[in-house]
Image 1 (spheres, helix red, strand yellow):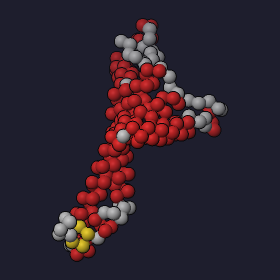
Image 2 (cartoon, helix red, strand yellow; image 1 turned 180 degrees about the horizontal axis):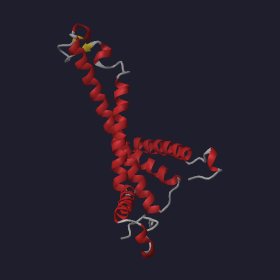
Image 3 (cartoon, rainbow, N blue to C red; image 1 turned 60 degrees about the horizontal axis):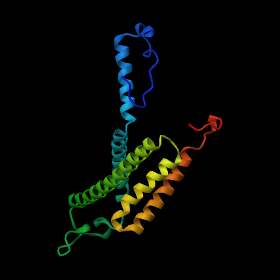
Image 4 (cartoon, rainbow, N blue to C red; image 1 turned 135 degrees about the vertical axis):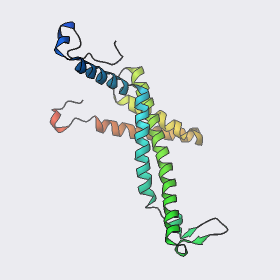
Length: 190
């Protein structure tokens, strides 16, 4: 069975080489082949990038929330607008509870945002790459523009245009840096 984007495995292409591999080895090679083709699909790339973005965003949000000063812990006041209590007047357990609750909210918010950006960008870039049948800088720039435009669309057309330009420029900078030849490659770009 031939899958799109798959390369024939050594030892599995002709009948004369099949007896050299045991059935377990052949099954293992076929599973590797199927796994590679599954991970090269656009839905898998989108899910993996969204999940990785979600995880990174959660860690980033947790770290950044511990540095903020506009939280109930930073302002020194916890509670509703009418019955606010100074954080220092609360017992230690209540102070920790308020702090962890605030860190959890910030972490969850960051995780959702990073996951959405990662999923949209990876899915759009993969679709563009499939349509263009090329793997070059233009895919990332176009995907960045679409991602930035979609994320800023609720704020209006001017914000969408600025989001498009900003994400496209950022994608171009990162992609061109990642495509630079390394010291040991002899000028070759992989």
